[in-house]
Length: 198
Image: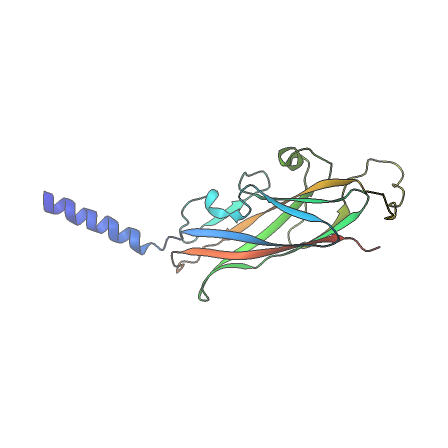
């Protein structure tokens, strides 16, 4: 009986080692801003697919949606009277060395309603269609009516009012290849923010 239990335990351990589990999937950010714009990662500061699902098996996908807690959140602080252009440069795969990759599709959304918190901002976020990598929008969404007057030029003693836009990044990892090696797959999404040029 004892020998039989040892053989069963050996078979279970062997099968776990041969299934090709993927241990970690994490995307970090490269943040680039100009003209006094400040980008701040909120929460964990990365897009971590392990927070959605701990272990991935071959032929699976993991999707982080906008409404999920695992979506990455960045706050962008800048002049309220300006439009900004946000450009997302995301890899098409997460990599473990050069020979092991997992497909990655990144999406993003933004909220420019002047929300006090990222939780409130997420409720009114505008999702960009799949495949879009850039968007230009005002720092503060305008209510209906006439357009706002042009921005006040910089001059001595003038301090332009500032506000915050929230940017949400999420997406899909997979399909996990059947030959995926266990390990930490990683990649970097570069986020560029600048004032729009008229």
